[in-house]
Length: 596
Image (cartoon, rainbow, N blue to C red; front, side, top):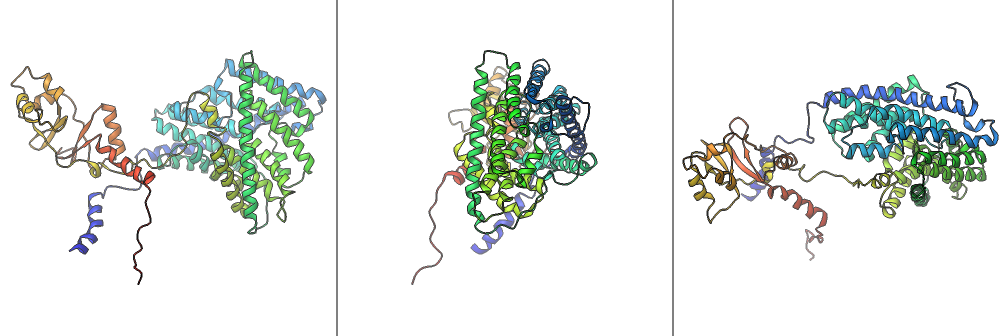
């Protein structure tokens, strides 16, 4: 008998919940995904426009020519006059930010996160136009930034504007905003998988088909279209040796050092930003002051100016002498911190890649018996992963930039260690600290909500006290609301069908009319109810929206046959199970065998 009951239990549970699947689905998903393809294409075009703007302003500022040719600002012939160029760029951007849109200031990624979490994923047309223009001016005049932050903001604005045009919900706008942002990153770097992981680790704050599918499709579209507008292939092709077992030890050491570098860069950035905040002048002038630091640094080390992809390539291939690399990276770090803290428009990815690669060059001279090209790449990724607290993104980003499969395991190990270091030593990342200073706290951990994991039929009360719709108010008050009152409200039934829920306040309002029935007192108001198959999270939201403490549970909307009641206290049950999982410590149970 017991064995039969046990074997039948799983089948019985399945019979009660045949409706439940792995995901919550929406028929609009296909429409949103189709729109994401177009947004991916538009973001790819926007990425090309941004890169052309950077080249145009680089030629204009440093070579006084109207050209889209790719030239490094380090080859200028301006002499000491180069100090003035970033100052002019900073002045222009300060004016654009003050009289155009203040949203163009900053890294790009924090602004996108803020719009997602606290702005219902709404961005303005000004941002879509002014962000790439201002970033082109800043980087083209020597700003030590990459194009990734601006294109994330620009692509996100494109996705948000299209979503607003079609009157989509905030959740759908978020999916398309992130789709545009990550598609832009894919177009610039040719790293679609890393871009999807960036969305998961930094931007979406959920992992659901409704957001993941549009993002993945947009990145795929950008990846396929990229060769039509830009050079195909990886930015920094590289091939390292297969790592040996001892590499694990050096990966741990490198991860700790990269984590320390990431923490020091974040701390320095906001210390300098605080110093700018104490200046007795309007913030419009700050980018010009930051530009002065960039100009002086560029005069001392010309290769510290601009995006610096050529420098990253030289570092990865170990083509720079140790002393040259250290001097160059020291200047780059200083001017990047000062310029970014001034509130100008620029990104963080490319500078972090360069500074991490510089640390790797140093370590390649210290670690014994290792491939010298491995450590610049590994430290490049780990510094990025530690600073942004996105180790998976950093690992796949470095792989996408180099296509070096031999380095995947060292990349993952070092990035994970750097990530762990910053998680343990820093409250917030370089991205979330910016948002926290604007008065918003972000909790970046997310998992499956306990209410999402359960349906109403698992938590509802099945034995329900009810009221007959034909009873008078006096009868109902005497029957259910006397000294022995068990609940604050009761479902009202007519011929077994729910017609409302009555509480003392509802009945007291009609107490002056003795002939009034309970059913008549409930008439006129729409009946709020739940189905057994409803998700507990959806029901909790419905109860909060209508300020209800309980909902009758009916078999279906046609019959309205009562099968139970779900209350606020019922919805606590999944959280109690979650508490047991998180907090309850258990001893090892006895082994299934006995000695002797």
